[in-house]
Image (cartoon, rainbow, N blue to C red):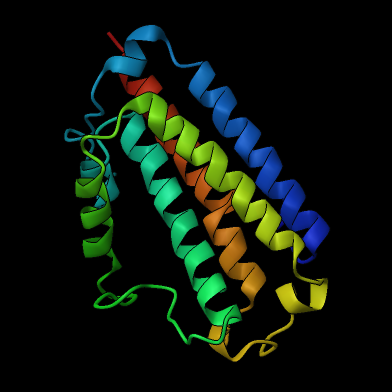
Amino acid sequence: MARPTTKKDLLEAANINFEKLWQAIDSLPEKGLSLEFDFSGDTKRKEAHWKRDKNLRDVLIHLYEWHQLLLNWVESNRKGNKANFLPEPYNWKTYGEMNVRLWEKHQGTQPGDAKEMLQKSHASVLEMIELFSDDELFCKKVFDWTGTTTLGSYCVSATSSHYDWAIKKLKAHVNKTSKP
């Protein structure tokens, strides 16, 4: 699927990939649901998230927290309270540290709660997207607080693209656990 450039396409991509995510979760074998993720022997997987996210809950909470970043950022700026997408003290060079803090914050969150939180935040993000026109979502410099990026691009990143990341991670886990 091409990267969305309209509100209709954005909502459709978000919903399609969200559904694919739940299909991937539902297809996990029972032992795959409870096994810790372990990609330590895979030298191709160098990004920090391969070590950080150790189970399904961690992946779901990561998606949830990035929804919260988007929702809080949009709400603050719409109310006239200038805010960056990433909260202080983080920036695009240090957001990996923020992801670790978000991971730490949820180590006591139950897997069922993580699923419910993500389902609710997904719905909230879709409701928020509905508030904006195509131009507001996909034309540059409509909002000064989006900088040189469109609001829609942030929305794609927090929804369909992030869901695709999670699906790939879950599939990698299934492939690893299904090998003898």
